[in-house]
Length: 195
Image (tube, rainbow, N blue to C red; front, side, top):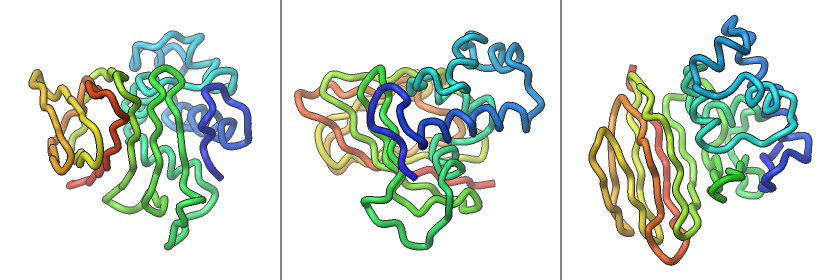
């Protein structure tokens, strides 16, 4: 199964994401009102996402993942139908943010039981993604820039990356990821759970 690269939900993988988000909320015993309170999203927005009526933005998906205690890569892995040892590039799960055009590709074989996740980010020129900077205890995150330019805000500091640069941080998510350049930025995202 692959995530759609279209902004609006249109296939089985989009509906699988919607269903998984609803199941996660129920597994945690959260009402729509409680989920809305935890995420800062409206009850109606969460309901539309869970029914597959709209594709969540990167910000909304980040907030939901934070409230449910998992990373975006773990969510993508949980939506996959199997956990292969070898993941062929053509079979990688992909998700596109309808707001910024950001494309996230899960490039490591999906498995929710592994401590390390590997994804590829593609951010269009001039695009930005804003997150709420939620706490992520026990997690280290690395951004390794392959092409283009990347700017990240982490704990009140701004980091400008050029190709070959790697930013590591622990325990909190970035509040902003932006591409200040004139060409798309391509980068590796490595999440490692340390506890």
